[in-house]
Amino acid sequence: MAPGMYDYLVVGAGFAGATMAERLASRLGARVLVIDRRDHVAGNAYDPLDAHGIRVHRYGPHIFHTNDERVVGYLSQFTEWRPYRHRVLARVRGELVPIPINQVTLGRLFGVPADAAAAAAFLASRAEPASRIASSEDAIVSKVGRELYEIFFRGYTRKQWGLDPSQLDASVCGRIPTRTDDDCHYFSDSFQCMPAGGFESMFRAMLHQPGIDVALGADFRAVVDRERFGHVIFTGPIDEYFSHCYGPLPYRSLHFEFETLEMTRYQEVGCVNEPDERVPYTRTTEFKHLTGQRHPKTTIVREYPRAQGDPYYPIPNAECRALYQRYAALAARERGVTFVGRLAEYRYYNMDQVVASALTTFEDLAKARL
Ligand code: FAD
Ligand code: UDP
Image 1 (tube, protein in one colour):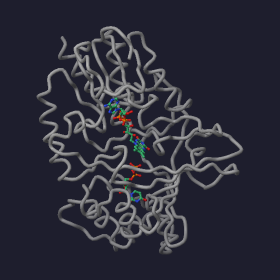
Image 2: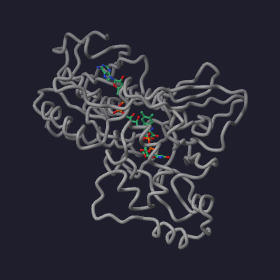
Image 3: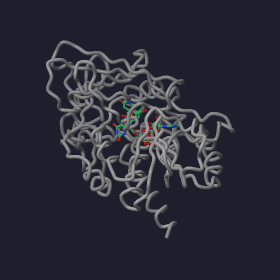
Image 4: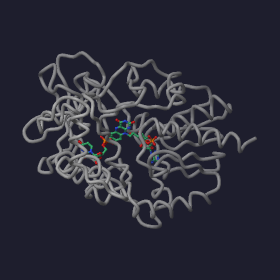
């Protein structure tokens, strides 16, 4: 680990840690040491070249999309952007149809005429309105009815989370819109672009500031000289920080299976989803769609959900949140430590939401110093 004294120790070189480190160094002139126990920066957005020279996302497909202009303005200091609008097909009833559900989906599965009024009328005839939307099951069944829910959401969600949609917050499946037009893009956000040189390059630019040192392969649990640091920014799992004193917080993990194929193109779109519960993986991603890379071969990844393994997904439901709140109460009392990021805040955040949270956390810290 780098020698010397630092004003801040930032644990984790993902979006939360890199944003905090960059702001602290460039805005406050602070001396910052960023550590990560992995051998790379960029956290789960890490996107190296594989053995064939194809850019892949080591921890599953990461597509940047946001409505937050503050986040776009902030990150644009560190990267150029390449427009990319993600499309996803779901394999249902032996064919590939667009998800989010739209006019095209309804036409292919039910012969609904291709116009918005017909699609809206069809969905209204199927929807089961509910007075209270408590779960992901309610969120979808109330919009599109039980048959479409079972086709597209039930099996995928049970695989992905190891829980039934009835056991998850409405916001989980509620992330996926339902459309009555023929827009086949996955996201609706105003800004949909990928960093032109990849995520890792963007992170290198963020961390390449006077005052920032980065130590990789360095675990916070092995840091014995905490007194060298005025303040700690912790972006790892909050329960781990407190030695799981209330028991482990549940996370969902994934096993990734990469395959490189001797063809330029494997599938029509970036992701093909597998809602059928009998298929053991949830989706197949072909990276060249996401990155725009030209290459005679192509690499794909399949995601196999797991209970054990690296913590990738906090689980959005009341039970897990109650346990998190106990850790959050400890965190609020912890002097000299700030918790920020998807694992530290135990929130199912997208990348832009993590950056937004870190920017706000930085502003609060900076104000508190005045
Ligand atoms: P992380 O990226 O997890 O970074 C935390 C870092 O802290 C890690 O590198 C870890 O090694 C390090 N760390 C933890 N504990 C310690 C310790 N004790 N000592 C040292 N280092 C430690 N978001 C989108 O916006 N679009 C997407 O398409 C998208 N797809 C996703 C797909 C998958 C499969 C997954 C898992 C996530 C996806 N996300 C996506 C979410 C995105 O990955 C996160 O929002 C974002 O990367 C979280 O950043 P973070 O800094 O909070 O955490
Ligand atoms: N989902 C689903 N079927 C799909 C796509 C998504 O049931 O074809 C549900 C599932 O519960 C998933 C959630 O919607 O976890 C959010 O999907 P998203 O694609 O945003 O997941 P992420 O990229 O975060 O893994």
